[in-house]
Image (cartoon, rainbow, N blue to C red; front, side, top):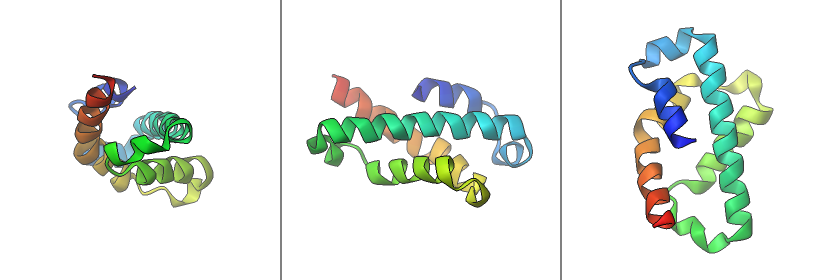
Length: 97
């Protein structure tokens, strides 16, 4: 899933995301899935939350995407892709060992 998000965003820019509805929909859906998976993981094992930076923010982003269609700021979504996803990938990799 993380690789899919990175793959869809590879070689793209924030400006492209802001104008490309298809890319918006793809990334929105991928982050919904990611946030839901993280929510279920923490429900099953709350002790993992400190190991995942911004876990509650990721879940909050999922909730916004799923329920607040008129309030989506795609600049925030792009920031999640470019700034936060690499760290999440590292942390998940450590957890999976």
